[in-house]
Length: 547
Image 1 (cartoon, one colour):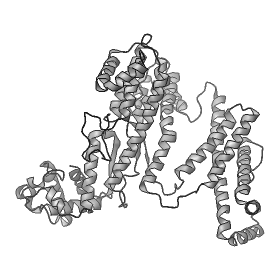
Image 2 (image 1 turned 180 degrees about the vertical axis):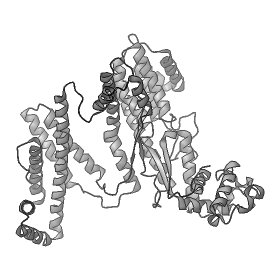
Image 3 (image 1 turned 90 degrees about the vertical axis):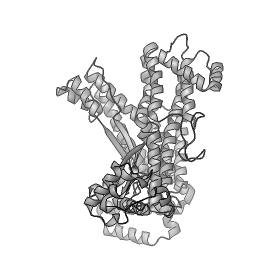
Image 4 (image 1 turned 30 degrees about the horizontal axis):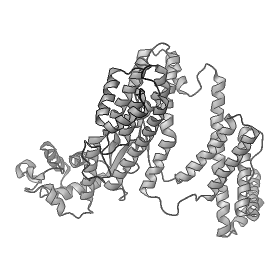
């Protein structure tokens, strides 16, 4: 395949990528397939340039006559080509932005955070007003499993590698031999892209969708979030020189993937539990790797960099908690207190079900095992002790350039990566409540009750603390009123009469999981969304089920 010319950087990139793809097409599929692809491409260009009916007729006849085994590599050739063209165009947008920023000088770049801050300052917003605005600022982006996003993670990773190679061509002063090596590497990446299936042979699972969503966090968002805060701090310092600002964590992320069960019976409580675990594992692994990097960086000697009393107390407590690790650190990092402090944090990040805590209700193989850290806030508190000690006794630049990015990442992503939203249809809640109340002998006719009677019954259940998670027998005829029946049973035996695969049992498993997540890491759980909620009882049913 050929590019569009050599007159500008974008055309040069397309020409380079197109030529490499053409070489690979000839190498992998043979010259006849390459010639056929070029013939189709030429006819399409002629038709587009002149709207020639002759060119279109020839093109249509040629394509209609293709056998499947011939059409497949042709389709893949054009699909791959357009992937590469999209990469080149994205790279050109980055190139243009970098050029604009270089040419802007002291002026803020158009459409940037700095321009917005400077505009507010120029319009008369004082520092106090800016701080008030920052205190109110809240931005949350939510991921969904979009049906049109069918790229596999492995395809995304290979496209990312090609994009990185293009960036290196632009930003590095390459020697001839280095350029040749980079070209060979680029060709290898495109070859791998060609030889990799565009889509899986099997239908993607829910966990594939979850991992695809998390890919954007590990590859982009973990790194981008601290840069946004850094750009904001720089803009504030330029627009309001000498005025300190507190920038709270205003950026958050959520996800519906693995939590949206409306119309999808495959999203079970077990799937949601595994989704929570995947979210948590990703954040834990990322933060753990960053802490290990910091251990290598912060080699400060105890004789030259003192610890604050708060950090000294933290280290002493960790030594008592992990005596074996403390002995190893004394041998390996003698008189390197910051490395010791961070090593304890890294150890706790990697620890599940620590000795002083019992395992979860599912035992040692529980899909939601307890961690040594009770969520991101506890981890953030430990990291802040390190940051405050560096700030007060050593050098603020070490906090800003080494520790601040991790602090912002933990503030933004915690130990949950993204808060998982749960969604279910209101009709499903109604069916579950009706089934539970009937099985417990409290109300056999809930599904046909008028709305005022439903509200009365649910309100009495809520006020008396009679929830599915405890004992329904506390509700008597007197408390339930005419719309409920007497009950001498708890929910447990009632559930035993319900099939194990029923919606009621599945829903109660879900709410048990959500209660546990809230107990251990409230940041991990986002909103509970009720589809088609039309009346008060639709909300009250969820409140009662949540118990």
